[in-house]
Image 1 (cartoon, helix red, strand yellow):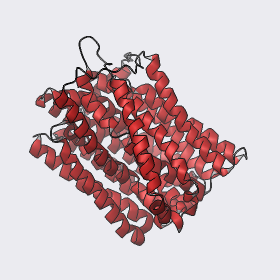
Image 2 (cartoon, rainbow, N blue to C red):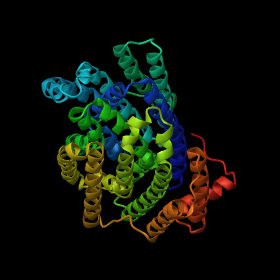
Image 3 (cartoon, rainbow, N blue to C red):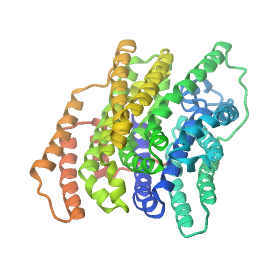
Image 4 (cartoon, rainbow, N blue to C red):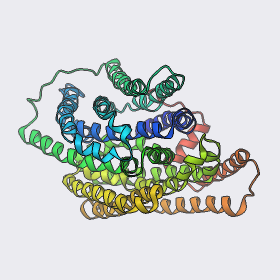
Amino acid sequence: MGIIIRQSLKATIVNYVGAFIGFITMMFVSTKFLTPEELGLTRVMIEAATILGGLMALGINSSGLRFFPFFKTDKNSHNNGFLFYLLLFPVTGAIAFGLLYVFFKTGITNYFATESPLFNQFFYYIIPLAIFMAFTIAFETYAVNLMRIVIPRFIREVLLRLMSVAVILLYFFGFFTLPQFILALISTYGVMMILNGIYIAAMGRFSLKHDFSYIEKPLKKEVANYTGFVVLASLGGAFSLVAGTFMLGGMKGLEYSAIYSIAMYMAVIVEIPNRQLQAISSPVAAQAIKENDHKKSQELFRKVSLNQLLVSSLIFVFLWINIDTIFHYIPNSEVFSRGKYVVLFLGIARIFFMIANFANTLVTYSKYYYYILFFMVFLVVSTIGLNLTLIPIYTLSGAALATTITYIVYCFLMLIFVKWKLNMHPFSTNMLKIAVVIAGLLLLNYFILPTLENPLVDSLYRSSILALIAGCSVYFWNVSDDMTSLIKSFFRRDKISSL
């Protein structure tokens, strides 16, 4: 876990810098300089491109990790056509799913015609945005396999957001028309794609030489079968994450999409540590599964789930105790504060997801990977069904509840399946310790600590006291060996290895 924790720590720092920039962008720049409809338009477009781009990538983020160990040889540890293999997928996917997207134009535009007609004006803009996303996924997957996730994360989480801020400000001050603004925003994703390619080249790893002759025919067949499965499965995973924003836009209008997006952005902060820990631990899991190392897989499952639960739960606590202060200070707070309980529901959903998410990874790399398709079907059907049922009744909270219910049930089913088929589970007594710490922090906040009149001062003093208590509890109760070691290393000022 040494390199996993080190790379995850660095990437987490980068991501929280990016999250801070993103927070400022979403909470203060976008809400100030864009109308709710314009903000909703950008978010729906990005979510639509996320779905389409995920399909165009043909599941390369999963298959690239699963089959990377098979591309290693004694003579050449990383090439043998692996980058060519990765880039071949988005090229093929862009052609196939780009054409399908155009084929379904009538159905898509009819869905948005009544409540969000502005989206239909930019229907074709989704295609280049999705292509940029698909190729970025391929480059990032390659970097993950090389255990180098920090720079790609910096490009995505920090640089992309800074470019987005610049584009928004230029639009507000009249340098762009609306179509030019959308094109400029799409171009920032193109820059992200190019910079990832440059980074790989700078590492001396950009090679399109390919020789698959040494790969046996059964492996080629397995790659083809797995890819077909992942394409179908990725649709469920991608859609379930963005369904609320997307469906609210069609059913209630782009303003509701904007409100939901602001709330969802805050809730997604909870899972930032998961992105890094998941990214850097996935290749290790793929190797362990390949070698049939049950003990290593089980240990990895418990450690990853424990650390994800610890960090995400603490982040959620501090987010929720400051939620009113956050909404108090953002521009147009009377509009966006309507998403308060969206943050609560989605935050709870993400915490459950932190516990079970690595189970999905283990199944994906195991011989039972095809079962994931059934889970994805469940996600899609449940998400669509619950959104159609709950949005007309509870609107914003209905969309959030639909996602929360779906994910909680999904997590329980996934954990049961992993115990049944792989004989693994993530639970330990340290998870109970985390629950006690979280409950104690909430009790202190709501029943013991006095409330100050100034919202900002009140948030700062509450957060400071609770952070000190949380840190001491985690350290002295040894909730997580990895976190305890990191705290000790920090105070010893140990050097962290270079990027």
